[in-house]
Length: 375
Image (tube, rainbow, N blue to C red; front, side):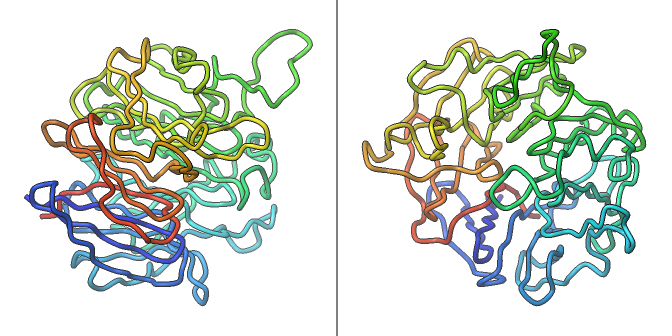
């Protein structure tokens, strides 16, 4: 069975392929010179590839490939706000792609900047806005500003279709917080209890902020769907349903490292195991490894304790970071973990982090790395 890593970068798309997870070949680029934020293989048919790309001449759009990336065709109707939108929103770039539930072949979701939620029911050929979110009467309060927060605009990301219920949706926004819908996107409510907002003044009555948070990444455990992990601007969290309160398990990280980062990856078979890549979030937020010494941290006890993993990494003067979409796991035994860096390196481990090696160097700035097993 082939293993593939789909690599979206600031200047195009590459695909890494292996049959044994040891020797890798690199194909590409596609869309050379254009920003590509996310590439995903549909796990339901294992042949449909979707790519979120910001083309210089076509603008923000989605492309589809049915031949492993050899050829691509643009969506007939890409994600876009309706003409005459009262808030004058226009999609700057498509940031996130999520395939629908296993029971709904052809369904995909997309998140954009400025923050919008869109859906396709025909394998990504046409997209329509989910008005229950985009036009919710409170949405303008949730998102803050349509030209906000992150360096290149606010993001709607981490779209999750509940493995147990295709109508139950989750999403996160940077900034704005995390939200959930029980009815396929028609109605929404905030899901931020327990999450810190260190950048906001305390409320006079001591109560929590209902929204306005800055989640960086949220994932659902593939083996225990009632467990969610969240990496946030203000810490690392876990939530176990039926609770709707997040617990800051990142407080158990070493104090000198902290619990700030972008991505989080759950183990494919062990509910209590997950990985994060901490970065320096102090001072002017350099977003680099603490002290220039990169390391992954792994928990095997649901966040009660953390183990540093740095075998194979540079021991000093390494100042790259790993973005929220740029870290993933395969389904091997033992599990493999892969991530791309802002200086264009692709790293991997096939022993669950006991040792890492650089698979490829000299790619452009990497936005995302996703794993797939094509048919």
